[in-house]
Image (cartoon, rainbow, N blue to C red; front, top):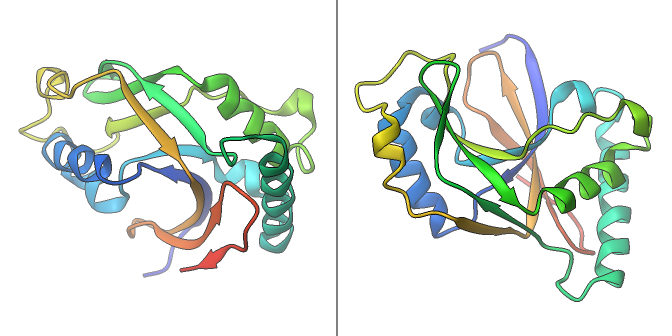
Length: 186
């Protein structure tokens, strides 16, 4: 399948919670569930456009090495998500309610070599459970999503460089630990 090629950085929900989140996502939005596991989008394709993959790898390695030297938590990123909310019709997400400052600080460290600090966007960190661009699934209801116990605190130890070709499922190109280590290719 060929089509528009998209790349982004994502924080995949860690196990064992990813399994529970993906089971819920399968009921709320089977299309999105089939395209990508539960994740927080860290940087979109337009933000990565100015960085070659090799430059991105170097920026990530330098950032994570620096963070690992200066932090006792080995540079992991912890985000806490609140109760599900609906958006744009039948979209459903879990908003970040704690840790967003660290999320934006890490984004800034990685992306400002290619993007001027004043041009860097500040997207709200969140976990999308159902995307409104997909057809509304029979199981799509805010009531179903509200059964998920929140607040939900997730600690991310790595970031993934992922790619989508056209409408195909996203695939992992590389995984970068959020500490000083070599990336692993998928």
